[in-house]
Length: 341
Ligand SMILES: Cc1cc2nc3c(=O)[nH]c(=O)nc-3n(C[C@H](O)[C@H](O)[C@H](O)COP(=O)(O)OP(=O)(O)OC[C@H]3O[C@@H](n4cnc5c(N)ncnc54)[C@H](O)[C@@H]3O)c2cc1C
View 1 (cartoon, helix red, strand yellow):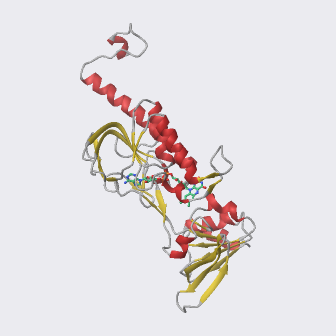
View 2 (view 1 turned 90 degrees about the vertical axis):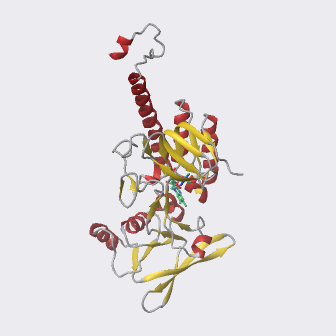
View 3 (view 1 turned 90 degrees about the horizontal axis):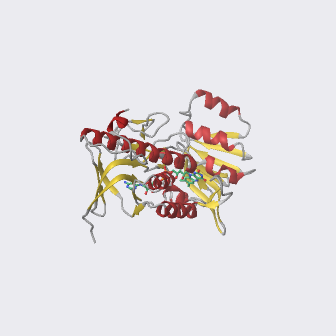
């Protein structure tokens, strides 16, 4: 059934990853009565992984379990969590307007964008089959699982070189596979890579298939094809890292907000304020550097606090413009003159 209602909220949070749910917790505790719209991936990126070993307070936690707990926490604090997907967002005038796939229109005095990012994948069926079972797009998250083992990284930019170098901290050997005969990464990064005795580069090769077994499910190697001769080479590995870039989920705002570094939402340094007052951004959507659950959660907290402050300022101005004086809380004897000080 299509819901065609209009809902107004002081604060609309779009996205249900660590950034969105943390913003929901803080905004609820600030009595903003936020509405959080989950999107088509309730819980965000951590729902497609298994063990998470770097969430403070949990030596190991399953990604999907952690996100169920975050949702419950946000709800417990009073956040209204709605299963819907925002199809369009109008930030040209206030209140801001968001159209939900359900038919609901959401109007909001302030908005927190927490729509995350997605790693770019090669698109191979075998890659999909082994995701979370040896195939990863995050060396910081998963490198530790491959201590003393062989790893293959695919890509040719800064991300690929950084990931390959980082993985030498754990792996016995890292093979970087690139489909061209030179890297796009910065020269200094390339020098570091070539000097590292654990690294081997396989030039002019593309990945044809990730190979492995099903009992238990795990990667055993990759099959790479020479882009000119078609010759096939099999490289054994336990971990296969795809490092061909990330795509921030900026579809809703890319023509409305300032972006930077390949499409990430730009915020004022040290804040979550975007180029439009009243619109805040948190998590992977704005972060091309760290892209972690804990940093996203931290930014979700910042966004809720920034939104709370901004809303209080707006509401204060509206009261002043209307010539209405509201006595400060807890001070019944205060006069308008006190307020003007
Ligand atoms: C396989 C994998 C393993 C990882 N492992 C770790 C790890 O071990 N440790 C770690 O710290 N990090 C890990 N990460 C990274 C971590 O998941 C991200 O940094 C984090 O999830 C980002 O949080 P976020 O809240 O910014 O966005 P996301 O988690 O990306 O969530 C985005 C949310 O926005 C919603 N959304 C998008 N568009 C719309 C829309 N139009 N309307 C409404 N909602 C929308 C989605 O439904 C989703 O809920 C991993 C990532 C992956 C892919």
